[in-house]
Length: 225
Image (cartoon, one colour):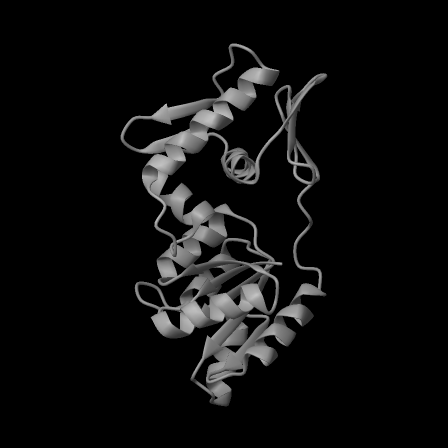
């Protein structure tokens, strides 16, 4: 499953993200602030959000509440040291689907995530996404126009998928870097530019003369709506 973990305590966040990947086999984006968690959940698709209650900028309770008010229907789990009945009620009333008290065992967290994953919260993304004359297959990672088809690499697909899900919107290079390569790596912004260049070459293979991906100078990239 694809999980967004929002935990500002560095040691716990790093360990939890690592265990979710290694023991759970999940894909994990780890962020350390409430505002970043809200932004990530707003522009991408996750199977489960795991939100710590006490986050800087915007606490987990507020993130959960604002997402629900804006129509977010995905699974949300709250992590907190607050164990009173009233706190649990407040978290659940904000829209959380589950509530886990700190300190917790990683096996219990994994079990609760599996349980949330078995429930249907959001419709699956369609296998083939179409816009204009182009088609992006999310299963095979093939992009096509008519009978012209090309296989995208994993990173090329991630970038293309992120752009088309937010078509018409300018995505900053920093957001793209954090979203695809995560906050934990030492990948530079130049890596994004190189990946965009490769992706543009792929698009030219199926649509010669095309210029789908626009460079917004000093900001980032977007794909035309």
